[in-house]
Structure formats: structure tokens, C-alpha cells
Length: 265
Image: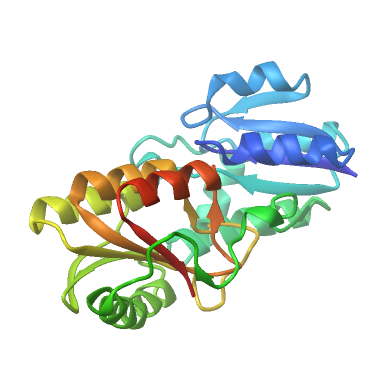
């Protein structure tokens, strides 16, 4: 399979690249200039750098490379899309067709543009199934009664904001909403909650009710736990089977060290 990788920021694209190579796939990488770690150049000889608004260049590169299937991996910050992107003609035409410009609409439109060129966008976790948690408590400590109450309340609220495509993360204390994720991302909303309320926080990060696993899959990792430690959050709840846990062993070890409980529902 000739695979195209649309690489955003963080470790996600690197893990996909490694997994694809282990599976014997040839990978052509389109790296987002404003987001992707330049280290990725060292790992592949089939790549190009594209700006956030250069959809036409990305598609031409994939076509020239004979790409049949593509994966999106790694976040592209909303603030980049709205404040720095200079769209090319292909991107501008796509944007003008959109009735709204939330995450689902924007990335769904890119998927449609890929499909129009005969390129299938596939599940972003295709090579990373072992990093999706099964249901249950993943740490030594189980959630206590207060945390279970916060999880129950938080899941109800989080599912609603996820359905509205407003964000994937909500921070709760004593069955009250402290902070809801907007454009800033998971770690930033956890730190914001810590500035509002002093400790005893529960973080709920979930997939959308109809989560499209091709894009915007929830991701947690060591930085998530580090943000929780800084904000004195004691509990993390994620969606089982639909949340990528990067550096899982290190993440869980850090949580255990700081008496943080992690549970997958």
C-alpha cells in the first residue's frame, strides 16, 4: 500500500510513520510547515512541506507519489487555521463551500478533496490499535466516590459538547463544570481550570458520540498528566477504544506516582 501521511504536531505522525514502516507500507509525508517537528525529515526521503492553506500542493504531491490511501495524524491548532493560513485557490474554493468552519466541517472537507482525487482517507489509528485502552481502571488507584460522581456528571456534559463539536475535554469539581475546552487544547484547558479552582479536579476527555476515527481522535499522554499535576487534578476519564494513549507505560507510572487515577469508559 502506498500511503500518504498528513503530519501535524506532536508524536502522533511519528508513531504512524513507524507503524506503517513496520507493516511494510511505503509512506509519502506531507508535513505542515507551521506544526510538524522538523525531525520528521530524518525519517523519510519521500516528503514535502506544505503550509496550512496549501491544499493544492498537498494533493499534487500525493498524486505524483502514487498515494492510494492517506492518514491524518497530529493536531493542527485552530488558532493557526484562523490567524495564519493563507489559502491557495484549491483551499479557498473548499472554504467557500462550507456553511460552517468547525473541526468536523474543515477536516471532513479535506477528506472529500482527497476522495475527489482518488485518495481514501483511512482510520488514523490503523497502525496504533495497541494504544487504544480497554474499559476499566488503568492505574493502581480506583476513583473514589467523589471522583465517580464527577465522572458521571462530566460524561453527561462532555458528550453534549462533543456532539456540538465544541471540544473533547471538560474539567469538573464536585459535579460542577470548571472549564470547557475551546480552541486551546486539552493541556491548556486543564491548566486554565487549575487557575480557576484550587485542586480536586476531574478531567473528562471523550470521543464524539459518532467519532470518525479518520480524524480528530482524542489523544492523551505524559503532558496531559503533567498538566494535571500542575493543576492538582486527581482523576482522568477517557473513552475506551477511541482514545490514543501515547507513552502509555510512562504516562501511567507518572499518574501512579502522583496518586492520579485513570479510567476508561
